[in-house]
Image 1 (cartoon, one colour):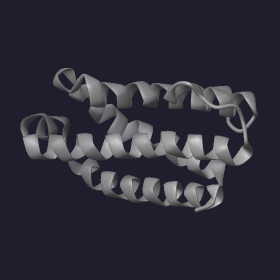
Image 2 (tube, rainbow, N blue to C red):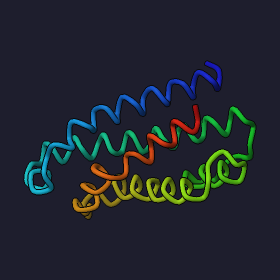
Image 3 (cartoon, helix red, strand yellow):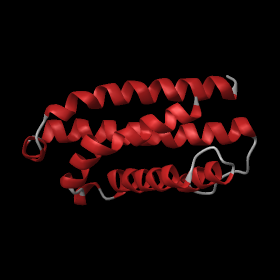
Length: 134
């Protein structure tokens, strides 16, 4: 599979996860906190969309033959250094990477107020990123 096909597949996966996450926007913060099944599904799809976004950044780096990142967050710094994204987008995507890390590593200490805010207000940043990459 070519690097361009990888990029296209990652964008497709991100769009799929964003569409699924739209279904969770109807739930209140209280509903999410109370229902373990909603929480588990929501956490999984937020992780998947975050990871796919990181993977997309890495695929763009490979396609453009840019320097290799040593961390997931560094992928976005490399894109900003090469004028593919701007500073504002960089800041948002680095925060998304931190959020992804909390979802994976600190899952017992997840703050659902933050999860709810990400669901309701931050997914647009990923949509803007894929538009920029296209």
